[in-house]
Length: 239
Image (cartoon, rainbow, N blue to C red; front, side, top):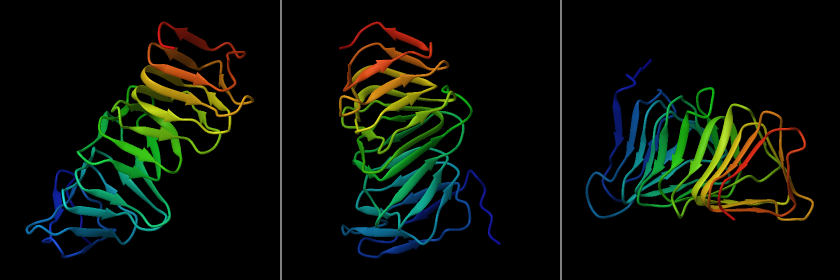
């Protein structure tokens, strides 16, 4: 049995043109996927679901191939200066308390993201770098903050944001879908664009424990903002 210290670093650093398999065990501390030398590209393919206690870094000329329908647990920052890919589906689960970022010079094209950080919205996962999504955003615990102007996120089915979770559009874009949204936590728009729904029957329903805080940016409601349950709605700016 191999056990790695949480502060340890494993670097899959084969030269350009040489591909590598990322083993599913043990649990990694810091994980780096790099091109050790040469100018060619190198692909690092996950053989199974990975658990990374701290940061995962994808280097330039390196591709992290996330596999097929795997969920990878990431406790630290996500730094992508190369390429992230997957076969048919993928979930990246950000699953430790504290505040971390999604960053890097490359746009990360995620499939699905789960935010399960801590027990309240003081635990923040912030997209400070470019990203996109083709799957679903799941908010379980903690705040997902979309800050980079080229960061976009989406739900692909009617979400319920629990009281311990939140969504903050702070310069990026939330893409809308043809469904309604239920907020029991915190929805904040301070910059960028948040789209809720695509059809007239879609609504953002704010529960009794929910707060909708629109400070700036643009919040588009294809149907209505429904505060019938007596939650908190603050509109101090924006359009």
